[in-house]
Image (cartoon, rainbow, N blue to C red; front, side, top):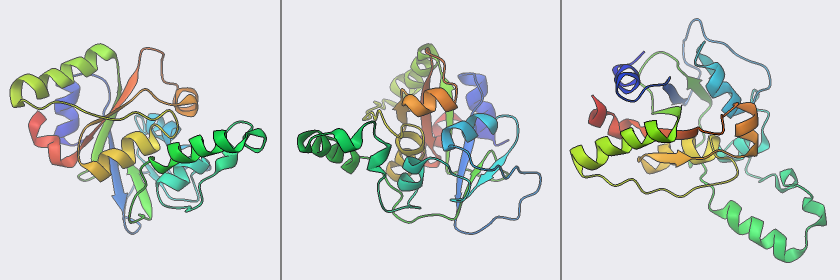
Length: 201
């Protein structure tokens, strides 16, 4: 476990999950290669055992899109897409246009694998999130600003958005992540990029 994980666990609490993007398959031992799984679900499993994912493992069409592994957005995944009128479809297309996508797709994603991570994330209570933000506000004068997504909230809104922007992001989850990652009603997700680790060491 990196120092950043230990430091954040001591300061804020909860398990912090390392996320690492790989251009090629890393030489890792003792990692799980699960069958079909949703990315958000895998983040919770990685608390107990390191996990290595590729596009063949991901069962969520939205995650495949945001990780750059499928350039076609799965509009059919929206409820009753075929029955929506053109105005409703245009609203959803506008929503999708703001969902972050990895500009250069990676081949693998490591969760709690050895070595330095690209980002860390955790599922925190509002009080724990406040303590994190207080450190940034009162120690460094940093204000946290973010935009929220009600779809692809962990894969896109935390993993990809935090990596792309290099800043802290928050997410209240989406229907899928609250179900598959078993997010409690009093939890939200927080992502911190590598460029900000030093603020917590």
